Amino acid sequence: MSPKNTNTDILLAGAFAAFTVDILVYPLDTIKTRLQSPDYKSLYTSPSTNAINRSLFRGLYQGIGSVVLATIPSSGAFFTTYEGTKSLLTPTSLPAPVSHSVASSVGELVSCLILTPAEVLKQNAQMVSRSKDVPGSNKLFDGNATILALRKFNSPTQLWRGYTALAGRNLPFTAMQFPMFEHIRTYIRAYRKRRRLATGTLWETGTVTAISAGSAGAVAAVVTTPIDVVKTRIMLSAADSDQPRGEEQKKIIKEVETQGRDAKAEIEKTQQAARGGRAGGWAVGKEILRTEGVKGLFRGGALRGLWTALGSGLYLGVYESSRRHLEGRRTRAGEGAAL
Image (cartoon, rainbow, N blue to C red; front, side, top):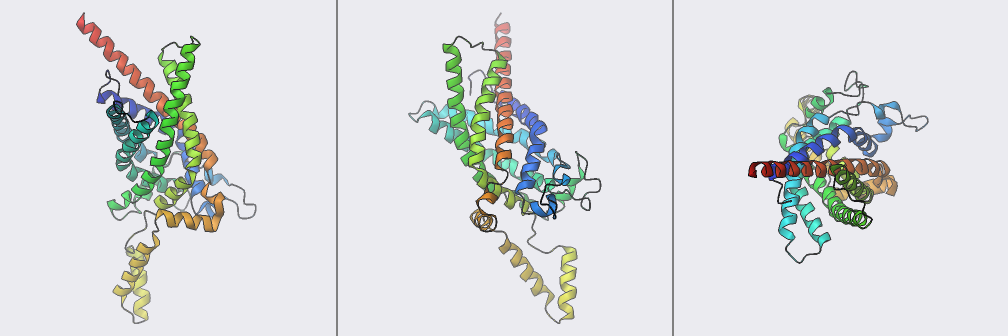
């Protein structure tokens, strides 16, 4: 953390960066989620031609409300932790790439605690795309989708079921991205200084940061796509209930009572089956590889690389520019007070 920046500066800069990226890049994330879903072929391709149908591009902002509310504090928490940890590790003898990896990983663990419920809700809302689920679902913005997705969850704890999957994806991603990002940014800055091109303006700061972050983010995103696919599948199944819902219970009771069996025992059996059906990340990955091959594990990889390049570039570019702006304003205010 810069000595002239306070935690408030970091929180504000991170929040502004997160809000900007969410608004601009969210549609690409929605398309990526749909491409990676297990229902991709049945929902978003035409049976006769296997061509993508228009429903893939409907309701592209579904679920954005929950994400905006969560990414603002989670981004602030990430950058505060990242900058603080990096400052603590700077005096040590650790190589810079290792320090950056450790700092970004610690930041992600904190950030994911805040972000997981919104991420789970968002991805389930992104999949509410059929007209029978949401009347008028062809609209670009659809607030009903978030409400319908939320109704799938019987317990708040279900919203945190994707924490391990989210952290499992983000940790290797940030551990790769941030060392590359810091290295590329340092190289570009040194190059511009040698060529006497450096201006020190906010525009230069934002542009250099955006190019560095976008390049590093694209590489890290493509490499970690299989983990992202597994994370998407787990989060889309997070709404599976431990216990049959009311209508399902009534159906089970009606069926088994006509056969003279114990309805309570049958409901418990269904409950155990539901718990057993929620496989871990490794099992989900193996199942995808078995049924869809390597192509299935990398589905949406190109789009993920594209939107991560745009998102990371905007995110860190806006963050660094905002941080520098707040730092400069604080410095000028201090100089004015001294006079």
